[in-house]
Amino acid sequence: MSLIQTQGVGVLVGSRQILRDVDLSVRRREIVTVVGPNGSGKTTLLKVLIGAQAPSEGVVIREAGLRIGYVPQRLAIDQAMPLTVARWLGLSGTSDKEVHLLVAEQVGISGLLKQQMVSLSGGEFQRALLAQALLIRPDLLVLDEPTQGLDQPAVASFYRLIEEVREDLNCAVLMVSHDLHVVMRSSDHVICLNGHVCCQGTPTLVSAAPEYQALFGFGTEGALALYRHEHDHRHDHAKESDRDAG
Image 1 (cartoon, rainbow, N blue to C red):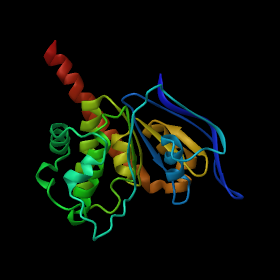
Image 2: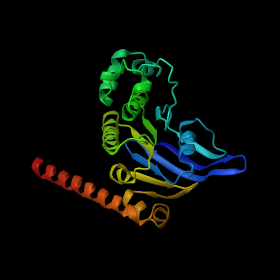
Image 3: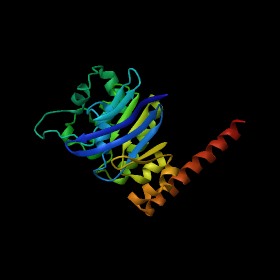
Image 4: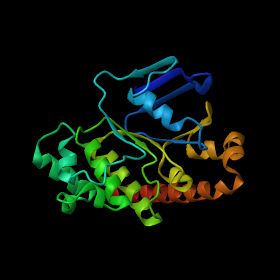
């Protein structure tokens, strides 16, 4: 059963067709990543999925009672606004301070609760945004380019955290990303978008698709090689664990 799915979704802004004929679904525990060039409609698609923007055509079907946590691509905070991390978490609508502390510990910002949001580093800021999204214990976590502007160690650390969150909450993750190597390593399902769904499927399938290679070039085969290495390593480790257990 899908947590959320679209059928023939399109978005028209004035005379400009942003999205057309988008069909997709996200099931529980899946990590689904949307990739595509700038201007391909990725952020618009996320807004439609979370209900922040109505589609011009087609439908979005959400599981009854679906809880969605959303981490935006960017959040502008006035430099003069006094807003501590603790206060930011309090704006989530969840007032239990013990829960706030548990989530802050989970994402690695428990020592930053008294700091001003505007004083945080890029990685710390993204973790604070993530913490607020997690306070509702979402069934579906939606992230719009959450690692934009972060250095490589921070990117790797953030994606490891997302995988831990998926395991802890038993939730699905839907994200937009330009980190093609990480996408191929971490995703269960990849959607290649360019105003419409060019191709979608497993990382192996999408990487081999002519539509994907036309957008990103053959150099991204390195991402697929990394994915295969990681996948094979995990598979071999699982077989060893099964033998040990037997």
